[in-house]
Length: 274
Image (tube, rainbow, N blue to C red; front, side, top):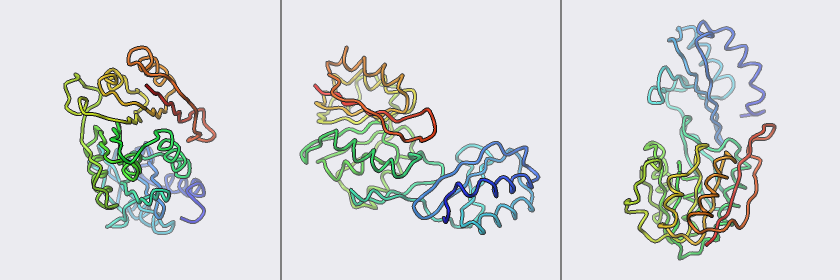
């Protein structure tokens, strides 16, 4: 989209001001792919025909895709166009194209994400014979590049829609050495089959709540090297303490990636070794 989404702030403000449901529109989610941008309007009341026409005209004029969300995530539907194009981004270093939907979780900064993926895989020091466990794998942002380097990759993620997207992305990129499963990593009892399997490397990329439950079983998992990507320094510090104190790891390196410029938030990376 010419000029980027930043140029749309004033026109979007004018659009919203003219909608009859402007007081019942609490959120607009922006999803940006390499070739197309989608806006998801959370609507608490049904938009009128005039509202829908204004939204569609705005989308057509600015080369956007517009979705409406009257309820939960399963209620999202396209307003314009009738058959929206899939969003996607490329990781050229790994010859990968990754598709996603407007409501999927992806990293907010495309160029920084490319650097993050490259650096994380470098820090994992993956050999072509390694088996890698990717916890909180999402749509495969790390799993798929890892599959270009490792013998086998297993990605675990609670959201079935993200798992489905990851499976589709693996097939789209011709990767047969990566598997994805839907698992709730906040509920582990240590008897899970994948915990007892032999893993050479582990990647942790949890939400802000951290990875306390998998970390509690990391001694049993037994990987020689762990890379932990965190969006919350507090939970990273907590889990780092558990890895060192309880699981027998040593903190080898740590750093930050400025994924969120002009904010107080950063993405942190920590490396743990046996």
